[in-house]
Amino acid sequence: MSDEVFSVEMEVRDYECDLQGIVNNSVYQNYLEHARHKFLLHKGLDFAALTAAKIHLVVLKAELEYKASLTPGDLFTVSVRMEAEGRLKWAFVQEIRKQPEGKLMLKGRITGVSLNEKGRPFQAPQVMEMLGGE
Image 1 (cartoon, rainbow, N blue to C red):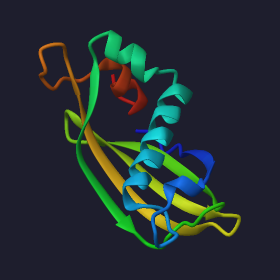
Image 2 (tube, one colour; image 1 turned 120 degrees about the horizontal axis):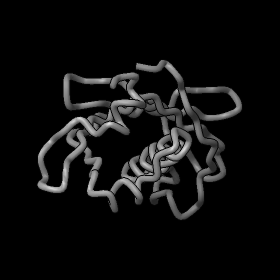
Image 3 (spheres, one colour; image 1 turned 90 degrees about the vertical axis):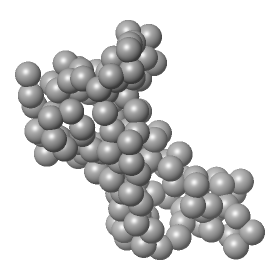
Image 4 (cartoon, rainbow, N blue to C red; image 1 turned 30 degrees about the vertical axis):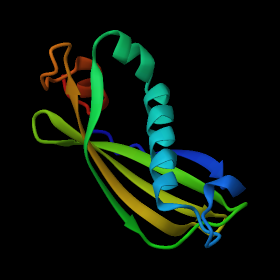
């Protein structure tokens, strides 16, 4: 398993906020997913190409711990690192930090698995390679 941490810089758009003037809680999931897809591309894997090859990366569980709220115009980074979670499962460990001060806004752990064309969990070689395995 690599300890490499990947990050993406983003900015809060006005329409992502609710009537309270803060980022709606569901929008954080979009931020996290966008960063995961960028992470995969950084590792040489295209999510759409994996799907076309009948390798489906699916989320089993999303654990989010909200620490503070982002507001319109805030600059932030979303970090991603990946770790094994048993023989077939893996997790994206993610954080959202407001910039430039680096204040922690959210901690997340997204647990997933690779499914083959029959919908069964398996060790996708591409994912195992990212985890430092086979």
